[in-house]
Length: 296
Image 1 (cartoon, rainbow, N blue to C red):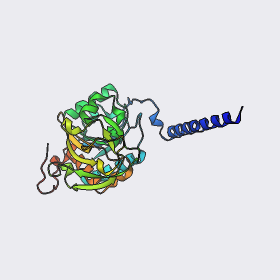
Image 2 (cartoon, rainbow, N blue to C red; image 1 turned 90 degrees about the vertical axis):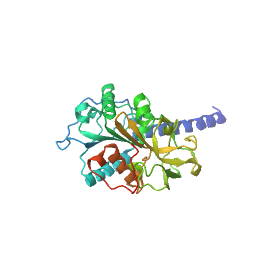
Image 3 (cartoon, one colour; image 1 turned 30 degrees about the vertical axis):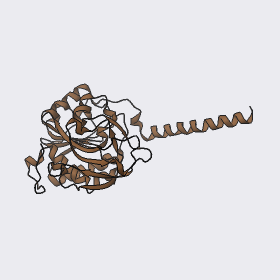
Image 4 (tube, rainbow, N blue to C red; image 1 turned 90 degrees about the horizontal axis):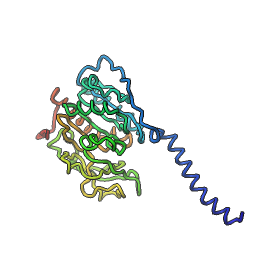
């Protein structure tokens, strides 16, 4: 074989080898991204302390990127909330928890970076019935990503908008300026500064949930970073709320890394989000900023 041909084959082989090595490394690091969704049929055993108005934290990863460090940090954050307010909390990655007799024990369900088609048709129906009947939902980061695209009701009524993509090029987690909205009209936004800066994997959606009736609490200013293909233009919400039947929904696209769950601005917002979604402020009054009123 002539030398130029050998060189050409070598040059072609090196990139292919690197791609294969990269794919192998990704598979070893994130095996959940490549496996089929496994449905849970045997529900977990709840402790006797879980009786009514508890907090359910669901964090199963099925068919998507697993945010391991973020999940652990969010669980720890929720634990701090529970200790402060005296809530009972149950953490699980078992989707069989989504049955009527279990869900009725909880005031709010937190989808902590839960991904993928992990619920059966019956479990989806039970969750929908519970939420629309007056339950509370708090979704964190990957709870709104593209791995949920095959669940139409969840995409359209819970998250409200289809996921598009996140920032990657030219920078994965650029620093950007954020602006708050409805600070005097919504409990979860009370106490937020008018503007601040942070780094994040900025999620972009097909359109703004504002156009679907959601109340925007935080938006990111795309003029302060390079969104690349993950652009939504002038209206790029990051946090919003709305109703789902008689239930309440809060979604935050923040939280790709563990730092978000101890952030001095975001952590109090998420604490109030749980309080609002679970109606805990009605069960036990809390101190609000002067002039703050509830939007819904």
